[in-house]
Length: 220
Image (cartoon, rainbow, N blue to C red; front, side):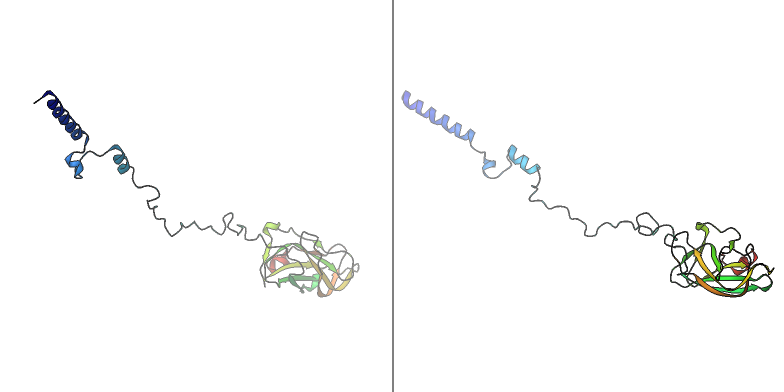
């Protein structure tokens, strides 16, 4: 073989070896167990893309909030049960006077709540005597507004009106008029009651504060 022929054979052999080294192995070509590339590994471990993954299912039932108690702040109902109970006026009550003690010309005064809501009975009744000037003086100490009588619909409160002694210095009247203490400038229509034989003295007529029973009203 000539030198040229041997050179050509050697070049051909080198080319075959180079192609074999660069090409895929048998396992790779057949889908075997070759080492995966870096890009394939990263893709496999990265997990599903955000656009292809399903979001975790949310509960269809909302979380229940704790109910507010009736007396708690912001619940709509004030803690004070008397917050909307206003002082009684003559528009809220009926009024009567009955003779309690003829010898002292004393009368039992009675008011009854004629409305549908409770009201507070404050202080003493304001009592005037027919066409005479002046009014009965206050006898005894009335409770403060926080301890005043809560007069429910249909319930009554009482006061004792003491007449004056028949000593020739006073006058006799057949009726009295009463207005309620409301601790305000509310204009009221006086309520009248018959009091035949009531002797009015310039110094001795007096009236007790409103009370929740007739016995206490007459004994003060």
